[in-house]
Image (cartoon, rainbow, N blue to C red; front, side):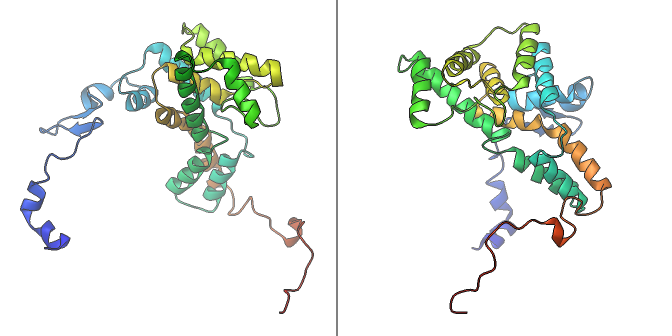
Length: 276
């Protein structure tokens, strides 16, 4: 029996009823409400629940404390840069100026954000490193000094440290102050990150960057590297929204060269193909 014939047979579907398992949510049988992560969507979440709380709930599976919600808001507040020269924002504006659908412009910008050196995936790599490194330190397999020595020997930068063009990330001190104001106690991952920073500053004048700080803080809150990846991508959403809105106001291809003279060619001079 072909797959198409089997789909016409109701027994095919009946055998597979109840096979879907999810922690996310479900429409209740009476269809008067839904459950989302264990909360009634219409009866509870629709009344007085902020977007930030829903986002935290979706990833963590629980509501944030007031301090956690404020800290997450601060992370977004110091990350949402609006400078159009940033890669992901120029991508968003470009797509919108060419009248791409909103979803396509947003997806393109988020794909750029989720890179190894900037944004989402970078924090996945940092969190993975810190969580594994903490396990090694706790097991007595290594020390902070040895971790730094390993990276220097391999001529590699430890994920979460250093920043292109400038030595210091201005956002780190701001978020650390906020972290303390909200009453958080330094966790093991943050402690490890700051200890590594002290060692790197002494040897190479390389400090902790914002991705390193956020990854350490969120690791201490119990998030996995993938969850941290997700949460950190959302830090850029407000500026992407603004760039898309502005892009639709611009003429198509605003960011493209308009004349041949606008392009400075720096490649090899014309040369004939041998044998042509």
